[in-house]
Length: 139
Image (tube, rainbow, N blue to C red; front, side):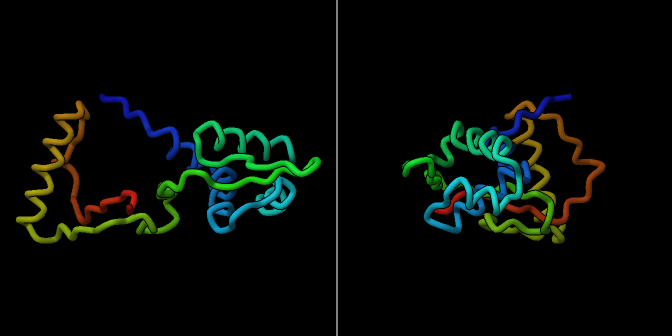
């Protein structure tokens, strides 16, 4: 069986605290550490742990200090991974209905070829394909 290595940014943003921090910073120009702590409701140690992780991935940065106050902002906007909370992702570029047998057959062929090229083991014979969602970054 093939081992799938997830993208570190997507994996990091699947964590509820990091996701909440990133989403909060996406929705504002900047927040202080104290403001972020109030938004996500974690202690200071955990807050800095998660902010450092996001910072190490190049997603956020501490862009200025005023006295003891640190201000944080987003420096790289990336699509949020689907956390399973909704059937559709806000980062969806398109969705293809696979109820048409010809479209489903074409999708199976494409997925087999992609699996073969990537060395991924995928069992499409026991699966019922209903929908293909394309998720990506809009330029």
